[in-house]
Amino acid sequence: MRAAVISDTHDLLRQEVTDIMESCDVIIHAGDVNTQKLAEQLEKKKPLYLVRGNNDGEWASGLPETLWFELEGVSFYMIHNKREIPEVRREADVIIYGHTHNYDCQKEGNTLWLNPGSCGKRRFSLPITMAVLELHNGSYEVERIDLPLAEESAPDRKNTNLEEIYTLERGVAVKRIMKGMDRGESIRMMAEKWRLPENFVEQVCRIRVTHPGVNAAGIVDKMEANDTIKYAAGSHIRKGGQ
Image (cartoon, rainbow, N blue to C red):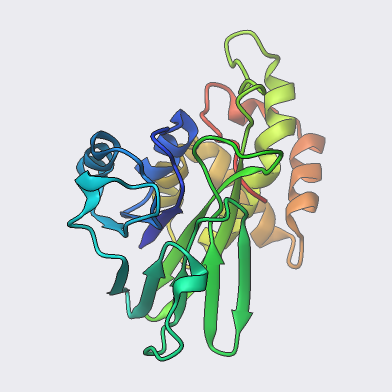
């Protein structure tokens, strides 16, 4: 199961965030949606776990301020403001919060503390971020996603040289494929999940299998050497976190 973890959208749902949500099974939002309209938009996309933030008005009076839930055997506790977490509480595998607009991910004992940052309106010079959790049988992996700033336009695939796009995004795609291989996912499954051409995914898998111990950078180098950049033609390799 894949979970999109976001917070502090402040009535702004970026297209990049929507694209990532499409590859996820659930959405986890740590508050400050700001409007009922946006909350309803999110709810229509995927099952939504949402708590009330300090900027959520009367429309959000029915939303919980804290939320306990479990996904794939992983227990979660969520609140908007970390400072308001009660001292006495049940243990959780993952604690999710927001409010600061600043990404933070730390393991304390057996608990992961995760603030996905803000993927809504930018505050000061803070980056625009979110997270994706991969959940399976009581275990999890977290991936930080850094989104382009509003003033930074995403690559224009109609007018940008293919090699420039590939150079920008190939490392992220290769790392995701390697993680998928470790989880035993099929080529088709990975291609559909990340919207990649199957022949591109297959090439990455083949290089990794035939070159034990190779890392993502090594796979990219070998693909360049073999002139396999053509496999990315027409693809939608999404820009994301490292």
